[in-house]
Image (cartoon, rainbow, N blue to C red; front, side, top):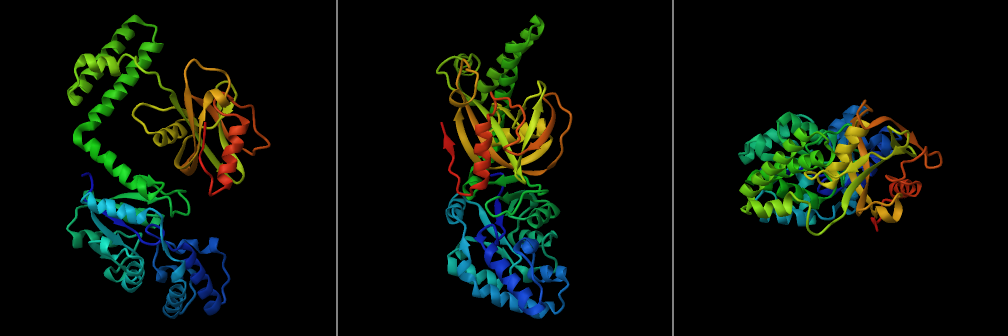
Length: 417
């Protein structure tokens, strides 16, 4: 296995505690310091210790206020729930043989109270709480403490949390990190090794990593070589280049044969000849919406589209949306929801001689800015009633409006066909 230890943050990762934490913090500040704050002004407290949060506000009497905050939080324990899919994930990870751990800014009494009540206490081998370290997240010490207790090395640990403090803690401790998008307030400026849209995706990523470690990465490389060779054979006009691309195609088939056990003839038939049952091609589009406007990139012909393009053979649809957005818009993004799976022939002119399935994602920006590239000449933000001339073969006005509708509706159901 790529990782031996999967370690979780608690609040915002395993447990949905945001409302209880913010309500109790707001009440404590109002009643004991005369301070009025909106939830948006208090969200900085998510992921750090209560003492650190109070210290930032310089309220004075932090110890007394911390006790009051804990009392107010305990009174709201009925608001605390386990995120959907978490318990199933923990069961599956245990069955798969992973060591499970917790690194949290909670004190041990708070941890035990909620985990016993919610039935999660039996899943974890090693738990690090506030009292176990002098320094807390985003410092490295909590994860270093976990590794000492569990006998783990940094390269064996994947830490999953919902905040920038969790990711910085992992970076400082030299472990891998994954952002739990189901509990994260925002992905802005949060760099992680993995972005998990839901608990089930954690196991999917781990399975894929294990497959790569078992030698299947060679198959992925062979597929990429075949992809490059096929594009070269299709578009090159020089006969010497055509010979080289044909040879690359042959080599990719030999690699595939060596790692799958299939004969060279069978690989050539299935893998290098584009014969057999014809299936649609895949295209991804990234809908990035902020402040009532959508990001569109300007193409060489002056028309605009959402960043996107054909899905490469060695990419998932989500990975492809990330790659295309970085190439065309200069932005690092995280796909957070699938808006729609559209049959291009039903929605986008002109007609094509083969089927195309278009996958529309809602994405959030981590960071970046537009940079000169070979595909687009600029980018801009547009409201739905002020759209520029669109590349309608890639996205129509109706499809852009659909993305705005999905952005506004947290309960949006994926549209298909």
